[in-house]
Image 1 (cartoon, rainbow, N blue to C red):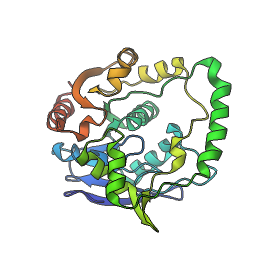
Image 2: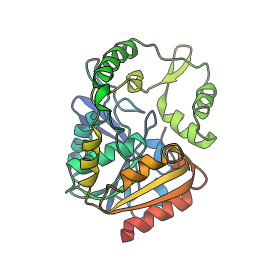
Image 3: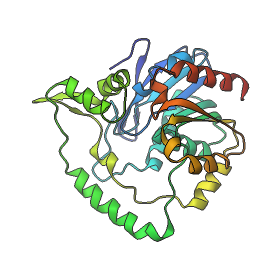
Length: 287
């Protein structure tokens, strides 16, 4: 699915095809947008056109949307996306750009900005900040979960829906509004015998082998020297993890934090105009 006003792109990276969408004039300042878990580039179909003074490229991260799935021996830890993102940036020829991430994409954005601060001019995080830390005593259990879930999910058969409408309804039941569900499902579905199934890799639901410690998370966030805008959804992750996110946000040296009405996908809801205006103000002023 290609939303109105968007352009489709493909990049060949590490034997994988990375898909993406763009909005705007390539001569304008560049923005890279990274979507959340089980979403795709259409996650930014409503927000990107509002950033009219920027050239926005939104990727389908591996295992999502129209991008390739990883090989059977590979994993989907948040760190695994960094090399492909870096290579796409090299192919685009961008030296400096703004990075916008939602949910899992916000976590990946923080990690990328920490690893390559010289590339990231500004950072915008939507309803997430960093990987949840692992308690030291949980290390062995985490490794066990990773091994068992990887085996189970590698052999898992994906559900087939008789109609597209049933698949869209299934996404709505996960908390998405109708328009958002249509956008996400439209790019995450493929037709098969008997109906439609998801293009998303089932292994995305598996546990990570390794998680960062609380100390590593603090160090990573403390290294983010670029101007950062942290926008939390009033009925999203902030509503259930308010204290933790507030504490994490304070670790970022140059951060402006706001809360906006809406659910976790507030950038795909009716309040997106105000959200876009806030981001535009930050991109032009750093405040």
